[in-house]
Structure formats: C-alpha cells, structure tokens
Length: 391
Ligand SMILES: *Cc1c(COP(=O)(O)O)cnc(C)c1O
Image 1 (tube, rainbow, N blue to C red):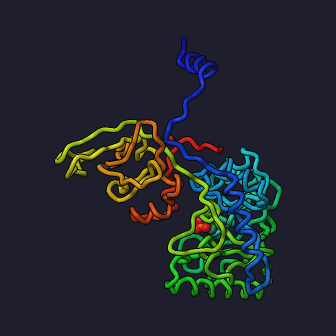
Image 2 (cartoon, rainbow, N blue to C red):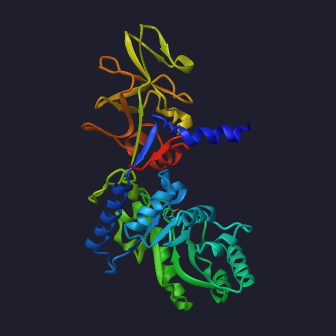
C-alpha cells in the first residue's frame, strides 16, 4: 500500500491531535478592536473635520494571526479595505472569500502582475517602472486598473520621491490604463515622539498634495497613518488610516492610548515534565543556568521552531498557576525550561506564554521589550507549527 493510502486511511478514522502549544486567536476581540478604533476616529476631531475610514492591515499572515480568518472577521466587522504586502497574500485573501477592496502595499515585480487583474487587487505604484509594467499588462488585457500612488517623503524605501514629481508623475497620470484612486506616504519614525523626521515627512506630504492639485491631479483618497501615527497626530488622518498592530490589540511602544483594545492572540502550552535539580547543576544547552540551591524545573514543549526567541532565556517570563515564572537555561528547538521552584506544579498544567492567566498578563509588548525587539516581530514569528485555534 502506498504511503498516501496509509495516511488517508488514518485521517478518515482517527482525529488529528492538536499540539499543546497553540495560539488562540480571539476574533471577537479583533472585531471589537476594529469597532473601538472606528469609534475613536469618529469621536476625536481631526483638523479637516473628516472622519477617516480604515484600511485594515492584514499583511504577513495578519501579523501571525492567520490572514484568512482575520480577513473574513474584519470584513464581517465592516471593513471595506484590507491591505497586504504582496500579490500572493492578496490572492490568498480572495481565495478565502474576502470581497472587500484589497490594497497591495509592496513593490510589484515584473512577472506576477496577472494576479492583480485575475483577483481584483489594487496595486500600489511606487516606481515609474512599476507604473509602466502595470499599464502594459492592463493594455494587453484591454482594461484599466485603479491604483494607489506612493510618495516617499523621507523613509527612502518605496515611493516616488517627494521632490521630483514634476518629472516622474506626468507619464503615470496620463496613462489611460491607470486610474489614480489614492495618494499615500508612510512614516519612518511615527513611534518616536522626539524624532524630527515625523513632522518633516508630514510637511513634505502636505506640500506634495498642493503640488498635485497644481498639476491637476486630484486623488479621491489621501492616507498616511499607521498605528503610531494614528495615535499621535490627527493631522495625518486625512481620508483613511492604516492600522495594523492596533487591530491585534497591541499598542506600539512607547505610545499609550485610551482606545479600548484587547490582545487578540494568546499563546499557550502545557507542562510536560517536572524535575528537581541540585545545587551546582545546570539546565539546558550551554549549561547557561546554574542552580545555586535546590530548584524545581518544568519543561514546556515550545521552542524556537514554534517562533520563540533565543533571547527569551534568562530574560522573559511566562505564566504558570497565575504566577510569573522565568524561562531558564536555553530556548531549545522544541522546548523551554522554567524555574518553578516552590510552586505546586504538575505535568499537564497550563502555561501562558503571551496572554492572561488568572489576574496576571504578559503582553507581546512586554516580552518584546524584555528581549530587545518589537511586538511586531514576536507576533509575525509565531511558527507555522503552532496551530491557530479560533475559539
Ligand atoms: C505595515 C504597514 C502599516 C501598519 O503598520 P502598524 O504599525 O502595524 O499600524 C501601515 N502602512 C504600511 C504601508 C505598512 O507597511
């Protein structure tokens, strides 16, 4: 019998076990966060008086939360525009049944443009080259396509330079295949309240908008703000804002907000073994943790193959029995070890790596800061081996 027949024979009769290390993704919390941001935008007044719409950012598998389920939940919550990093992510959203507008942020390579047309995705055009390529593909198909124009106001990544538009723009806006729907920019330092570049970019972008007007270019929509910019300055709300991290219930450091947000992802596991060690005995690869007195060590089946970070050893804590306990030794591929000395801990007990247990919480922001990274990285890194459970 072939391997395939054996496997399918098994899958018909026997339920597939779920690993004890899992990510619970609370889609209700996600929808509530979306509504909370909507209410905040409506209640705070921007200088223009416009209540901005939301472009809900679901790139990178919805920051690790699962783009298909998250995209559909946001659509159900009323989102009219989702955005993703590339055409492939956009196609995955469409295949999942997302029918909202889908904006692709990233650069377009030459070969994959068919997906824009076949799956009704809205491209960002951020270089003259991309403009010509999309126009050519549209022409070959006898059609036209709407697009968002990206302006580089100082991040020096993607976008038409803010100070060179007289030269670069005419070709683009004159193409009969390309229909300008929106103009946008992206801030490099929105989460750094002291950095002068934010205001510089804001003023450059306003200058670009006047210049476009003078050139007779009138986009229906202007947008600029990611989560941090949305929180710090209503002058950059324009017609739409582009929150990612906030939707997932995480506030970018070091900002704070009054918006009611709930973390969407909880990462949990269970203790698989508990053992005592003696003074002068070490734990884990590299013997990095040395017991100075008798210790109790708990082993948890979650490691860097699940997206945990090596830097968590000796720096981050997790929750067991409603208490914070430190990760000791090293983060292994498939396991971590905890110092649970003095606690009544048994195999099978729940471990919360990110989330709430009893009265204690550990946030992605806290763990990220303990290991010197950002919550974005922690969330996006949650491994493909971790089952996303949508309770
Ligand atoms: C990722 C991204 C966002 C969302 O950023 P957050 O900080 O998660 O809100 C917004 N705009 C662009 C262009 C992005 O790439």
